[in-house]
Length: 609
Ligand code: ACM
Ligand code: ZN
Image 1 (spheres, rainbow, N blue to C red):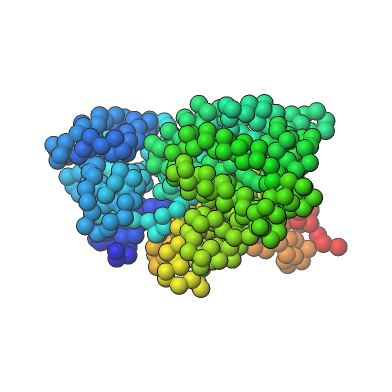
Image 2 (cartoon, helix red, strand yellow; image 1 turned 60 degrees about the vertical axis):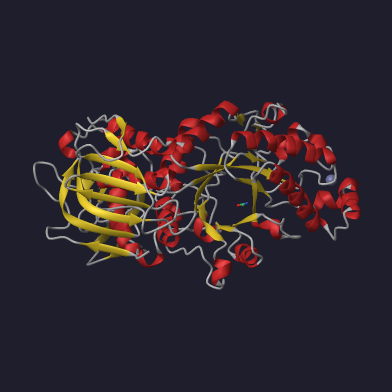
């Protein structure tokens, strides 16, 4: 399809006024593939129902989602009505074959003086049209306070034809190292859906905790979900199967697929603490309290290991309808296997060359089992070592080499290299950032990512399904920090995987982010605000010092104090430059229009001697 951002405007770009309420500027994230902005506006006919053109259950879900947003944020509480054509002015959601694309996720959104029509080849496409529609309203549409009046429900007339660049648009969350409540998992899913992303990769088992109830093996959660520190402090918890079902249903209502990850053969100490007989040495083990990689892994020689994993996976498959299931496969040291008679016997009997091939045997055997359950195996790129199972999909994390090799072997690939997709890395100057695992991944670098490696042939490139952002939580112990680490990098990645490459422009993106930040404010998301940029803190004329700070974004305000207290929303605005002859400690922070602020930077200014 053609890729355009056409502005057919006779008026001003910006807030367009008329009849009292302003019409918000069109700032959509991720940027649509093609858009024509017309003059004129449309005010939602709040007397009208929300029309759907069929009884399709998925279409109804998209309509229910939209109606819910209106009900929560405004005085408009539409009923949903099935009607082949809209009976009057209003919003019309239609399952309809699109003439510009066969992509199941494509949609057309048309706003005229008479109403809104969203059409899609599938309910999922219609849902993405709904997401775009929401972004045409004021940001408060994303909130749960009924602040929007009927007169505020006014949007620009336009025509958008849109579809994603990539099929896999994922976000991962590690709940092994730290656990987050179901309510937060739902919020995370809301954020995924809002960004037109479609996979939530739920990393459910780790050395430091087993987080999913398995009925046949109660010790997995009874023992494996709690780690006990040397001082006796306990940390733990897990999701019951009922809670898992609730999360999956919630995600489903937002067209997000949930991919569980059950780690094997490594990162499994929590399971081994519960069932030490599944290890090479027999244990005993404690649920790990230290991060890192354990030498103790599932024994690949014992049949019990496979019976156990098949039982576990059988319960998991019943909870997660998504076609893909992640089995980990990363960071599995071979030291125990080398010394284990069972593992060595397996190597001999199966004619394997070494322990890498034993890992390959392990994963292949699990893949065969998953096939009987109609599921496709996903693994980290280590599953390439010793040979890939026939139908495996590879998640490339140690750079892009694994992804390239897998695509060249004809396997599907999801790109998630640490250098672009690891949202547990620092995103700014470490002096002003909360502790992270390491690395440096600023927003602009995420935005610059191209999931398709340059050296692939067009045929090989077809195997790159998309990309995914990973949020490992060794250093992320609460939900506010998950939000801080994930946002706004998730917004940048959403555009990488949705927007056609020729339309991706970082400057343009940062302008559109003004609106996205306001939406995140409405959702009460603790996204990262960049701190003030230190431009100059040198000795100037005579003995005085001159401090110049720059606003990191057009919409922000820098506030500061010199009395040692933390700057707040009522603190003084930082002047163009601050001259001082005294020794002073300046504390400054960036404030968004809604009041959300950056981390505080602290600068000592005094006479250098
Ligand atoms: C990983 O980050 N160990 C997949
Ligand atoms: Zn063994």
